[in-house]
Image 1 (tube, rainbow, N blue to C red):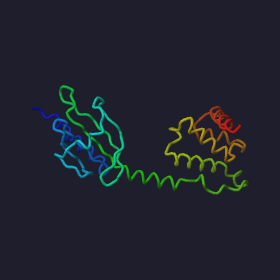
Image 2: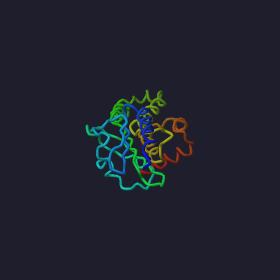
Image 3: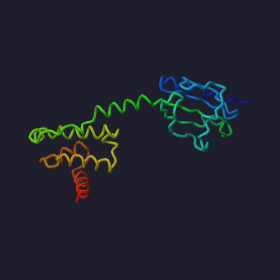
Image 4: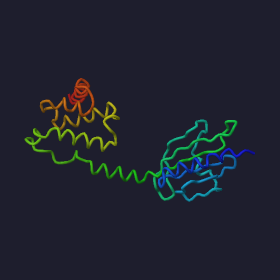
Length: 206
């Protein structure tokens, strides 16, 4: 009987080596319902253990890739997992390759970064200073906004851009002459688009 899972073992080892020490890769044998192989073990499981606890939440094997989906390791660490369905020569599901990535460290880094990049709650500059340094004020507000939301200027959606414009307007940025042109350049949009967002924001308060 052909061993359809054997070619995937070095693939699992390669993925685990690339992501080491943050990920384990587990190959499940659907034929006997056991774990066939574990590369860089992060859990307490071993080859030969029952697979049921790992695949019980998978509702369908129709898709070639399932996830990513959240999991929790035995020690409480948050994991981000994705599963590839491994098929035999007839296209039947013969096994699963589960990649479990430990994201707990990244969650901590995100929280630390958010704290260090928080400017929105800082004491406002004096009006005279603001008139001289309004560009820096814009940069601070934009940087804090992106840091808190974990996004970037290029990835912002329309509602996020309007939320940023709302915050800039509340700081009085658009009361400064020529500020709108600078803000438009920072956001990477046309003045017309910026004015449209500003009109929408101010319309909410009308």
